[in-house]
Length: 100
Image (cartoon, rainbow, N blue to C red; front, top):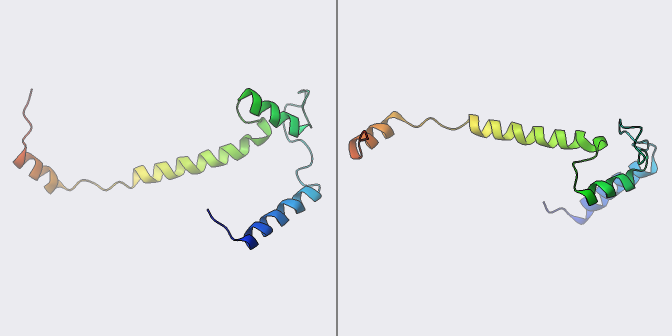
């Protein structure tokens, strides 16, 4: 995934715009009793250190990614072509199945 310098600058502009705005400023984690609630930086540091799952506030990102992967896998598996009957006829002619 190579991008140009200009595309890189555009991505950074968007990131800086989000950081400067109030968008995503509040902690979205439903676990409001957690002592790290609202301290997202340290929350993520703890999750990285412990090697635990993804913080609850970011699980929706993981859910979207897994749903896309699952959809791709199901599509790939569903689109397998049927083995032609003549292949089985040929197999039986050159190498018949012997009952054991």
